[in-house]
Length: 177
Image 1: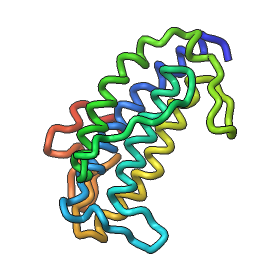
Image 2: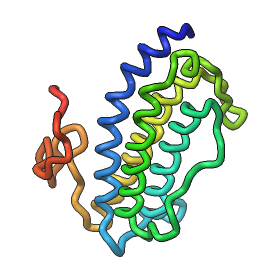
Image 3: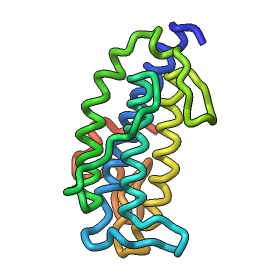
């Protein structure tokens, strides 16, 4: 990949990453207090484990892009014992990384980053992987919500529980469909 292609790809993917982050934050925060241990089956993660996994991994992918390597993942503080607290930690840490991603030189975006022995891709490719990973697990967590008696937020369009764009002002510029 040439540096100018990597910069174009980053510029294309960052608005998507930002849009998906807002939805992910809303899904994480939708798990009601007291329902953190909900799991739909014996082999499923609990809602809390899944919320932590989503938040930690997305930031881990972003850190790998920024640093040019996968390092030990940052985790929420031990005081983050609810999904709402994990959502807040995730949002705050995402906001800290965004300017660093935006300012990465094209040469850093094309450097190959090895991922746990499975992949060796240009750093910029991990933006797309971060999005897909979060969306995949966010879908799982959103499916937990009804089973625990919670409402499902609007994701790309309205849900049975919420109009799109949501009334809470969390999505300022909804995409035009």
